[in-house]
Each structure stands twice: as structure tokens, then as C-alpha cells.
Length: 155
Image 1 (cartoon, rainbow, N blue to C red):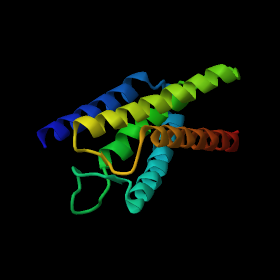
Image 2: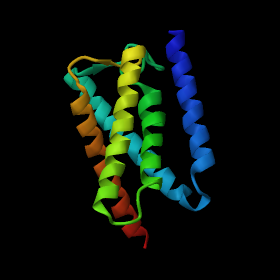
Image 3: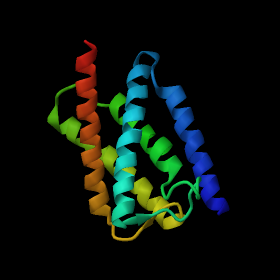
Image 4: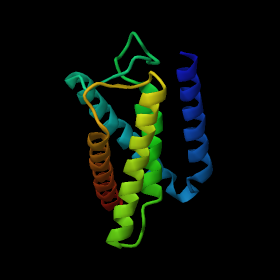
């Protein structure tokens, strides 16, 4: 249990400090909207995964309130989403965009599977690396589509 608490504290501190240090002042509004939207999308994703029985969270912050992990899906994964949007290539080169999607989906998937292997924060029951990777790509596409729509509404 102590290992899980240390992982969560480290994840919180790293996520918050990275966002405070590396989000430019002029992009904070985009970062806020991205953070909130990714939190919403990952909540839906997590809820479906729990209902279908493909994942469990043996260690949870709010054990009596929910079967979901708060920190991972409301702090850590939204931070990945914020940096996905902030670092998104401005050039329309398909190769750079493909690599960007690939790297971020791979990073999220690797982080998740390392947490599964070395802690009891996540327990994958009927889940594998490929399903996780492709579902992360789908989530990133949804996030990018939403931000494109949101920015068009601002103009």
C-alpha cells in the first residue's frame, strides 16, 4: 500500500509541476479546456472498462465512493492530454502528426502497463497492450477533434 501512495504522490507532483513550468501563459486557456475534456473522456472510458469487467482498481483513493481510480484518470492522463495538445505539430506534415500520435499513445500505454505490473493501482483482467494502445489513439483523436471544434467556436 505504501508503494501505491508514493506512486500517486509522485504522479501528482510531477503532473502539477510539469504543467506549471511548461505550459506557456498564452496557451493556459487551451490547457485548461484540454485538461477538463480529457478528464471527462477518460472518466467515460474508465466507467465502461469497469462495467465490462476488463479492469479493476484494487487500490483506490476513495474506496467507499467509487470503483475508479481518481488520480490516474483525473490528474495523470489529462496531463498527458494537455501536453499532447500543447506539443502538437503546427505543420500539416502527416508523418510528424502520425509520430506525435504514436509517441503519446505509446507513452500512455507504457505508463499504464508499468503501473499494472509494479503496483496494485490497476489490474487488467481482459485487456492487452494492443487494445490499450489503439484505444489511447482513439481518445487522442477525439481530444484533437474537440479542440479543433472549440477553437473554431472562439474565432
